[in-house]
Length: 165
Length: 211
Image (cartoon, rainbow over all chains, first blue to last red; front, side, top):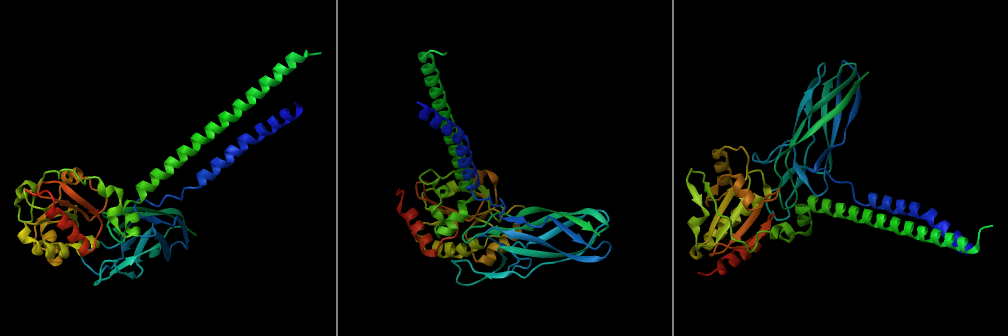
């Protein structure tokens, strides 16, 4: 009887922690949900020298298996990836520089190629920021496809904290 | 001194309480796991309709592609590039291909010249191809220029949300419906397909619903 009581106590002590362990595993199981629009902003904060033109890189990532047109697609009917920035008061955006795209061919296409961004790409923004904290906001306009289908044009909100020293 | 029978009763009660607690913990855990699994499955379905199709190389394998198959093609009246009204009913008794496309869609523009070739090839079988544009806010002359550049002369019809909804379109193009002579959808495909696959689906529409 004593043994049965000890066993019961051990079981009661372990049960909740075992249940918690299983729950934790399950919560970790599902992969992180990809961005619904297939593109996400990786940059959230940058530090610059205040009052002088400085180049900051805004990092974006296109979901695996997808591509978006580069800033200079080969076909004028295709929608170019472009940033529309609205800097905070006291901040000035001088210019933006887009990376070159990579050549991509649709599996069924024996002829033409596309100029696209896949994976991570960075847009360089030259700006003059004031001293202290401010925010660089805007939109990234793009249009995503995979090997077989295309999705409607989308805009991704851009918001990056800028600290001027 | 506590009588022996009372001690036994207390031990039995303790055992019952313990077992009940274990069962309750197990049930709670099971429910939690099931809820998590269900959530994970739902998010998978939402996130991968087209990408899974693209990965498998056969977008028609997507379950969403089969939703309209076997149903009567929803009727519609749309406007073509010349402002003329075009109804699906105009082509009653003929096999019809309804291809939803947009000017920004590379895979769509890959298929369109093939649809044009196949319409020419099966003209004597009465085949009709209709291109249903899905661009938003694009000028008619731009759509006309784009379809001309792609090399199609079959009717291009301008967008209408009601039609997209009645065909239960997903958030992606191209999507194509093959309608037989009786007005039934005999196949539905998502994504670009090879010319041979398009022809096989067209033959299915031609060979079905004899009148």
